[in-house]
Length: 537
Image (cartoon, rainbow, N blue to C red; front, side):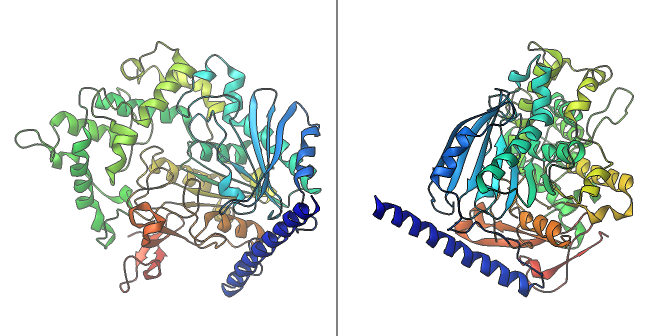
């Protein structure tokens, strides 16, 4: 037994030593870049690190309306360090997980936002591998991410899902951190995309003291209006369905119209909002075929780009930007039959219309009236939307907010992301960039993937250079909070086949909106070093 204990202790000391070497490397790299101190700056030493017994003691921790059902050490494996995994529930309905690194804790707390309608606890590995004590929640109900049926006729569950559940788990998570490590976290961070991005905005707007820094990507700011817009795309496709085999021709047409507008023909549409594109260029001149669209399909595509309008022509919400339509079947057009089923636009919208607003028997695609029915969504706006633009309480707290949205995102429209940022600037004045910045990667789909450089360490993406604030968005946020160095660019990476094992295909700086990456005129167009940030022409 003594031999086993000695072996385990020696393993923990060795792990701490190896992690310390990584920290030293990050520190050296930071010094070389001119930073005053490393991003990862605090570790639990092997001698003082909590062990399995300390982890098990959390079972007896008494917290308000909270039950901890399990607490056990998970051994280190691969890149993941050893950590104490805590499972529990608040008010018997809001389930959570809290992962506590035993010897690699960086002294900070992290909350991971969940996607869709949540219903499951998101993975926390993205944070734990960086050294954070991390928490996540199902926000109070169980089910598939596209299924909102558990929220039907349950206002409290809807509020828990919208914002309250994450706030409660954040509060409890910090208490568990303090109990386990014997001290409170030094900083608190949030990162999420899609609905997770909305959760980040909800925290900034409603609970400005919860986090010191937030990364909110592909954020669903207007839940109600986005669902109306999704309905619009499906109505447009009804009777004018676009099958998957026509998508390459659509992508080719937008690329031909918009690629070279920025002065560089590189297979990327950098600013689709500045490009004039008319879907009629793809109208079939003869028989229908994979290289063209029927007049009905052209009209449907134009409606998708324009966004929803009422019978008076009033714009009700943003449309999608043209370009990089390769993900249309996944997000908009589906199988090319039965409007856009089973695209995510349909699945999320139909779930919202039936389980939040109109009832289970509602035919969302055929029944929604764009003159009358937007009024039925208003009662959900206060709880479900994250559109508040006065962020002064968060700013006074010292908080920093990084927003991002792909220019080729066909779930959360990039035009709406840009408009929200402009509204925030209007509400908070010229000093907005001191605490809020927006990054719009060209050619990136919803939260990641896509033909453009699409990996910079955000949720669901590869961490290209962990701890390097030029490549790792979480490290960029950490440096901004800790050292006051605002991110002037974030270098995004495109892997060959989107597989890191195949090597890097291209890197490109993503600049703070409204700036964009501009080619210097020399060097490889696949190398970020050949670009500088500047205003669009």
